[in-house]
Length: 402
Image (cartoon, rainbow, N blue to C red):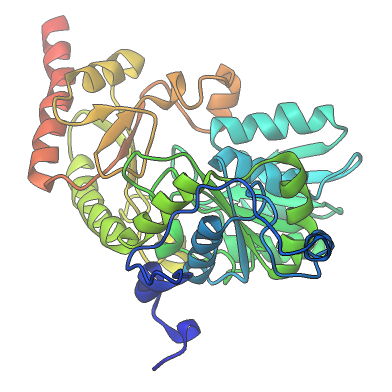
């Protein structure tokens, strides 16, 4: 029998981290308890000193969380993982655990709205300098990392306009500057991109998205080498209460069993829709890493093994046209979530990035015309018909206006 470390990623999604009780259950057990008991006072003392292998308190250790962490680590190819209450808790904790007054952070400017707020509003209040750069421009990274930095943060592909960062090149520059590299890998998923193999130090996820993929849980994850997780991240995690609930961890464990099946299917459909959308007269421009029109298509092919389920499209006619399309959808739901089995669409400028100023959104290339489409598992033909009839409303409105 092969060793678990030699299993294919698809097998790890089903089997990694499995820890059965004496009842020999088929499905993973759910441990809802908050605390644990000891055989003696000496055992309790040893556990708190880290000298005994005991769970102590579910805020920072639980058998169900451990199964989720071991399974995710195996899929990612990471030495260790900690799961968090939300994706933003994971991102914030991965930064805060290693930053202090006077440190410097360099990040790609194309970010999710809440990530942008952490970097530009919260960290500066703590005396931490942040510098945002055009993530697509390697010369901008070179200039920013010509002086020391503590941390580099990026999303690739980015939310919502799907800009890419050359992870290997930027990681090399960051390490020369003395910085750790964090990659938010939500859009690519561990199925299609391995930031650690490309030189990153830390990977974060909102497990709410594709990793669960069925709209059932809030969660996040931080993955890195064992030293970082245990010596840097764990003390912060333990004291600040960022942990995931046991029930959500159990749901996540079960969700991971079908991760590749869902992501592969959604990505195939997204690729088919992108080809058709690119030719629709109501579309001004389309952003999808797998489409030949994407300016970083070559980089996408080089560092990703697939292109994901998210499409960004700019319709003709500004916010009014974008709202017309969204309000005309009959099958596809309007929602700011993504990575779900159901196809979802939103207007980033008024939802996920509404907290940014007009100038900040312009710097991120987010316009009032943008619609973000998260492709689900419905039949491609049904989705295309729904998108067509919604996009056609722009054309009809223009004819009526003329």
